[in-house]
Image 1 (cartoon, rainbow, N blue to C red):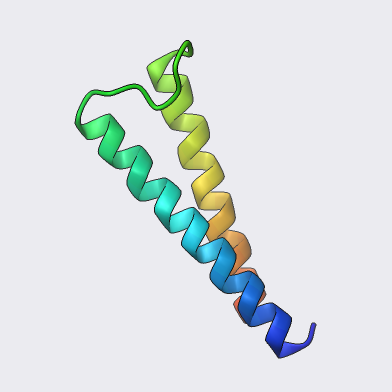
Image 2: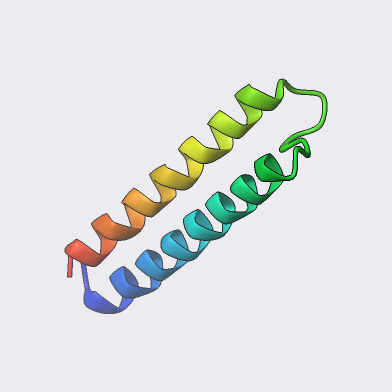
Length: 65
């Protein structure tokens, strides 16, 4: 992978994953639902899993440079 696209993709994945993780944690700490109409535990778990996967992809992109 060329370094330009790898840097861009890594930054996008890292920002998305980090923002999603912070948002999910803030919602859980305030006792607010992460997704409406879904179990609070399940929605927090799925959102956290998606955030961690995005962060892993971001790290993988940075390692491909």
